[in-house]
Image (cartoon, rainbow over all chains, first blue to last red):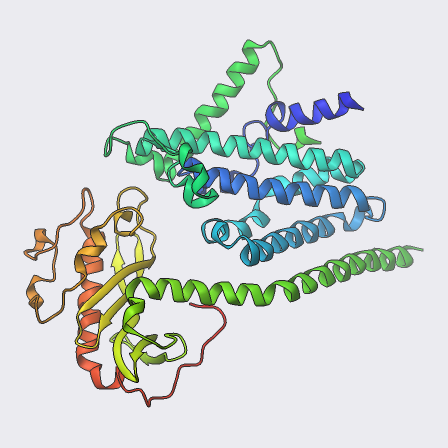
Length: 224
Length: 211
């Protein structure tokens, strides 16, 4: 049992990482990573939706027949996104003002759907919850890393405006690493996203090769 | 046999839809009032940045009117009054920046002098064109106190174009768009002064969402 959870954690965070290994969810991974702060916020919101929808599908999996599973999965993800959107708007309004426009985008992210299909549909509620959570955290890690690289090279800061997103207590995260106006603008524009992702995918594979592991092939099929 | 299975799939899908529909309807029911309150707070907060609270004793949103601006777009004019007299106005103005339309809120007093300008929405390049946001710089504060009277029309330009306002490093198009927006906003007031300060005009219908 414990070994199963260990695999889930390792798969989600590194081995089978949603972005770096499966290359899923690239739309938010490109669009929301101009700064590490935005990337972190988007990642955490996605992780919450993934954990909740994986658990629900794991719970109801014996009632979901093969033929209707895709529409049910989409229904579950869309409902969870709507709930997060409503609750955050009503009760975490400061956070919502910054993250609000990203939340509906989670529906269009194929990573939650891929995990429901590959894992939660075949496992019970608790392992599914763990899988959704750690896949989501792996997604958060990937986005934050891309965002950090782009932000450092592009604007010379790290976690700028983190206090606006998470509250004044997080002021300590805001750093300026390079002097003002020295950043390479292209890195915070769309090409920088593709460039950074490509280099980081290469980096992950090089680390895996050095560790003597077989390279994880990209694509949704390896998730199954 | 086959027909029966199709029916059961339909029933399963229908049951899930019904279940989640109920959950969503209930969630909407318990959040709708809070969300409306937050939206009103947001609107009053953004208005408070361009209309100081000391100059009015009314609710700006309740005394708003709607009218057409110079480009024939419907805008809402929020009005500040003290003891029944108009002391200030706030309305949305629009400028074209480097990456499309920018939306700003302009606050002026009854003589047409700027009380404050704030950017509400824009798509300018982060780190380059977004220095007009008040949390990222004080550039936008330089307009406070200016009017068409104390600043002649031909001076409402960036320095590069022969006007009196600094562009910011690496960006000229964004400040140019903002200055144009403010100038036409002030001209709108000049042309429609009587209508905009008429307190007997019919009040605007307030929608729940502020857009």
